[in-house]
Length: 116
Length: 111
Image (cartoon, rainbow over all chains, first blue to last red):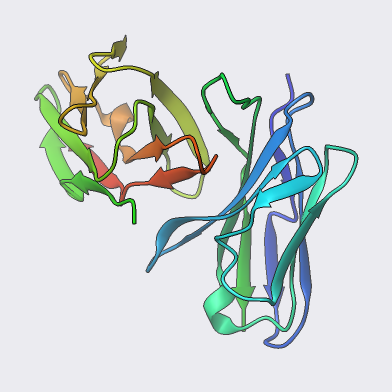
């Protein structure tokens, strides 16, 4: 079946511009996660959605970062006024995680963001 | 703060040899995951370990979990070039609903 998809695959932007990154999770997966992977920081959690709610936003690095999820499906991560330190690969993952089940997350191909 | 440490960070090994990658974590958890990442690619799930003493094997890779020692191992048997990749362990402590990843071990297998 279809896996997690993300778009765009690559994004180059100028410092100060806003960007939107999109994630389409696996159909039926209620949990959705955003992570960031950079050379200096490794793999970092950003935000978690259960349905359309975000009970854990603790990984968002600043108020320039926001995310939403609609219809329990597609999610958009928005970065406002991008900075060079925002350059990284942004990964989305989804799972069927529930309180009594384990949390095997399936990852999308990522969006490579480069801020010039 | 939960920390997940892997060692070694880089491993260069000859085909046919055996080696073990270690994953230590700093808080109580009974769920641990191993992922593989090829260069320029995303993360592929390898193993899900859900309880103390869990052992799983797939081909030349075998993963185990000791929750009392807060340690997981990924053992490579008779390495082949196709196993060259970066391997990550990750811990799910349940209450946070997120995975905390280790630093990754970059494995390079040469003839």
